[in-house]
Image (cartoon, rainbow, N blue to C red; front, side):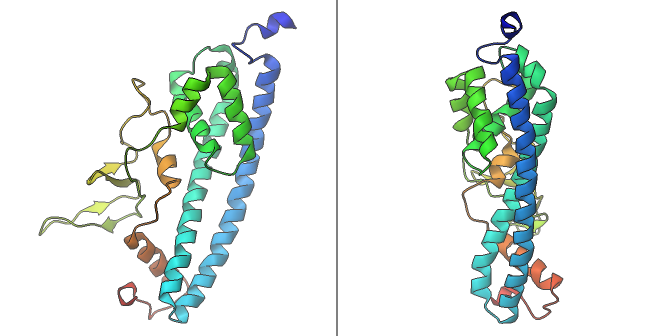
Length: 239
């Protein structure tokens, strides 16, 4: 009824709310399907790279492994987005009745908006359009323009970096560099103005970074592939 529809802000009637619930559920299914396809691609690509290493075509293997790293990062990003969709699906009624985005959902909403144009999941674009109706263009543009303030390159667990003589420093896989300093992605700079929570998930942004992987990470992937396929004579230092 019309009276029921007036409970919701802007164009978010109960019908729209139901539609967005359907879109969120469809997004989760599409993401799971994409993860399955990408995982299959990665497994096949690793076999191809192992063949290149056996043939001592190390330079070609290095180029190919960057694609694997990118797909692995995309898989992680998709898994983050699936969790966000699941959360928003359970909170859809709260979103519908609140005029402003609830503080504890700002990061989730902002992350879906930010990722909609950066990853090929059609349903995310539809959800983004609904958030434009709900929260306005300014909120959406704020999320779209969020950056990490510099080059963030996710690191593989336990990568040693340059350190003062006698010191050993290891970087966890959830850490990266910003302006020459080590920054934890779980404790990184808060984004989105005065909000107590970041506006976009920082690990998601790192995994969808446009920058190529570091050489150490490439070498670690190649070493792991060589070990898995029992290529005992491979040494990244020789390539």
